[in-house]
Amino acid sequence: MSRIRRAVTVFSALPGTTRGIAWMLFATVFYAATYGVIRLLSTEFGVFQLVFLRSIIGVFLMMPWLISGGIRQIRTPQPVTYAWRSSLNYGGMVFLIFGLSTMPLQDVTGLMFTTPLFTVLFVALFLREHVGPRRGMALLVGFAGAMIIIRPGFHELSWAALGVLCTSSAYAVVNVSTKTLARTDSSNTIVFYDFLLLSLLGVVPAIIYWNEVRIEHLAWVAVMGVFSSLARQGVIRALAVGEASVVMPFNFLKLPFTVCIGFVWFAENPDIWTGLGATVIFASTYYIARREAVLKALPL
Image (cartoon, rainbow, N blue to C red; front, side):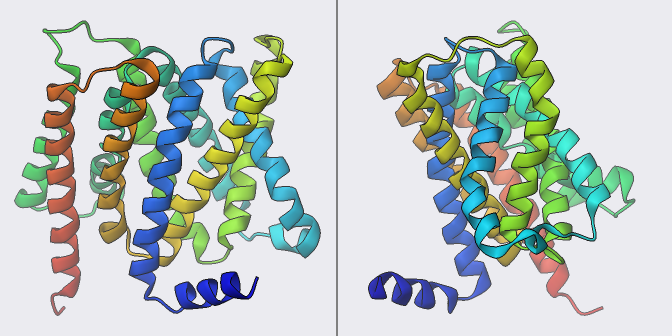
């Protein structure tokens, strides 16, 4: 235990950006693994049931934290933010799991890289933040990368691909709200409300489309819940302690991890077009992030 405490102390002493990068790398590994487990379970369970199971297991995993610290830990001055955030989160998760059950893992992962691009777009449209010609061009290039992955006209434009783009846009707003919530609430509080409210939103659809959970499924369902919880913890902690413009580009490492899982578990061969499109998206996202950092550093 002393070694663990020493390691925690050393880690806590690192700069916030360094810890944010470490948490994001942690999250990418477990998100890739979660995608693989969801694909396995999607042959037995429907989308709504998987969303509910993923969320309710997260609630149970957070119970030791809640019991040890008491109910005061979940008091929040931002209940409205949690409410609309959870609605977006639930819709996004439904579309994401639908995509994971029908599309190659690498394609889903590649399209999810558009989340930072949607963030910039929404900030410009709804918050009236000025987006200069350089960032505007990078935004167009990034969405062109998404088109390289989808390749409309060469492949049938599927509902699953459109759904994943909807997920990416919803998660863009969710990620922005994480920074707002982190000003008053701890990372554990945010994660707890994520899972609790998603469970409440998902219980009725899950019951309507419920399939029997047999003993041989329990281990994989538990693994899905644990991996998903760890991944969510990683992202929220990364955004809470590090600059989003610095830590989010490391999310790109999720792609090689999912390519490996898709190849080993599901015999999905790496697709050059997905790799190319994802690289274009990453390059545009990285440029926007660095441009944002430069603009912040300029004197007013």
